[in-house]
Amino acid sequence: MLPGYFDLLISLSIFFITLALVIFRPYRLGIGIYAMAGGAITLILGLVTLKELELIWEITWNSTFTFVAIIIFSMVLEESGFFAYMGIKIASAARNSRSSLFLILCVFTAVIAAFFANDGAILVMTPVTFLMLSSMGFKNEEMMPYLISVSFISDIGSSPFMISNLVNIIGSSYFSISFTAYAVVMILPDIGAVVISIAILYMIFRKDLIGTFVPAAKPDGTLIVRDRAIFYLAIPFTVALMITYSVTGIYNVPVAFVAVPAVAGLFAFAWIRKRIDAKKILVEAPWQVVIFAFGIFIVVFGVGSSGVVGYISGVLLAIAKFQEPLSLILEGIFIVPFTSVMNNLPATMLTSLAVGSSHLSSGYVYELILANDIGTKMSPIGSLATLLWIHNLSVRHGIAISAKEYMRLGLLVCIPALIVASLFLYFSLIL
Image (cartoon, rainbow, N blue to C red):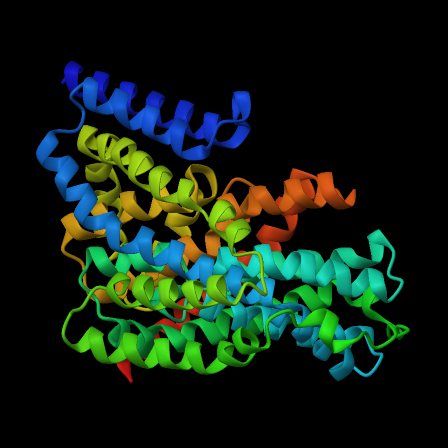
């Protein structure tokens, strides 16, 4: 028994040290380097075998390459001026009302998260929102309700499609769920989570949303849209991708086989036209995420092999004895501490291993995805995008939010959102 506990202690130590290095980044190295260092140590100590390494690659390659492709797609659209233009349209549609501006911005963010992934939404919509509000004379403290809501909705609204979150791709790939089958079940829970989250955020910030704003002078459209061909391709290209995902999913074609060549073609088109800075996109693309995902999953697999998966499986089996939808809700709440403390990517891998070994029904698979999408907002370290969001707001814009305040908002918003999403999931499964 002692050697098993020793392996567990060593694997957990490696995980938390790796996670700390990723968060604090000493020497400012890429996050992938720290994760791969943790993975290498896990391999050297024999906590993960070479055969298991092959399994980890099979689980992660589709999700990571799809994620990078979707983020590059969003970066191409951002450089073309698509999102900045939509920001102007949002301000115009609000008709000078601060509350209307808030509601429209939240809904638009949820749409962007659905089609361009949560990280794409938070990293694109944050600067767009800041520039839009600053151009209308908003002070930093007046921007907080809008910026915080963009952050929360980007993650909470990232459940409807496989491509909406790296968590979704990992979970659905592990359990061999097709793009269409996933969307049929998860669109309804996503809508429920988004609606209740917007309602709660509105109630929290309602005093700050009273009154009107002075619209900015209408800028020259030629300065906003830098590549009109890419701009006009944005919506039809997205629709074509979604249709292709659905059709190829029938034949179990990995999503990456569609996303990567399609986005590569669009990127090549943008490169040839030379209207946007394609080299900048290539340099700033999240290549480190590929390395990070593989490295951190090696570490997590080592933790799972050391006995943690067995403990989690035992709890999940006990929870499954309750009637649905209560058992789904309890599973989600049980997973939240893992995703908010461990970070949502390793938590998804760990809980997927546990659900898989427990042989639970598909409802529990979808619930673990919801919990890792929504529960990540319970703490600032729940996702890499949130950490980057907080850092950028502080360094670039001088806007700070404390961890205490962030967690208070997370508790107020995420638990109700997860409960509502779980109820909607139950109805979606029985329809």
